[in-house]
Amino acid sequence: MQVATTLSGASLHVRIENDSDATVHIFDSARMPYFILDAADLLVLFGVNAPDPEVDYFMIEIPTTRPLEPGAVVEHDLALDAVTLGDHYETDRETTPLEPPVTVRCEVGWGTTPIVESERHLYSIESVLAWQQLAKADPITLD
Image 1 (tube, rainbow, N blue to C red):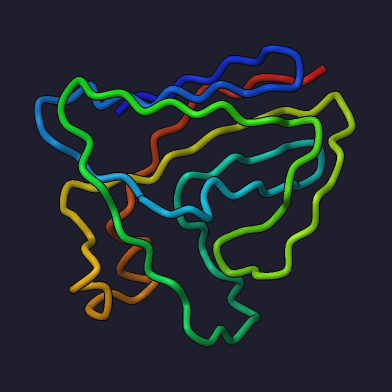
Image 2 (spheres, rainbow, N blue to C red):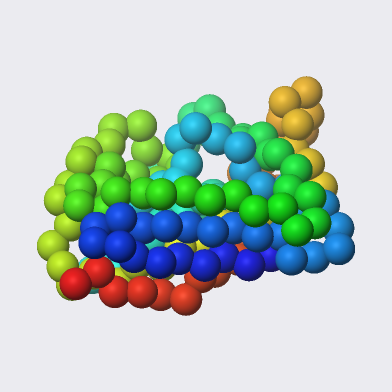
């Protein structure tokens, strides 16, 4: 699995490619990607982040996946002039303008088996995190 990112102005192009010989499964959620800002880094996450151990969550969504065949590519173009910050567990999100310079990291969660709608009830967030492998693009800087 390969992830590559390029910047053009304040637009981030993300290219996700299955470079293996087997079908892999990537998350298929309209809520993704998540934009998580910490210090001077912005994480663009097509995956599930770990929950805050100090928070008691109720009804955590288990996202389903879709297959990505060998050689298949998925591409996304994302505006970075203002992003809606939030992670997998947040429902209240706010749009925030980014103040350059910002280091942008992109990660894509994937696995070797599907998570289908009819079996979501069999998963916990811990089992999803254990299932998830992360492919990471090289960090780039938004100036």
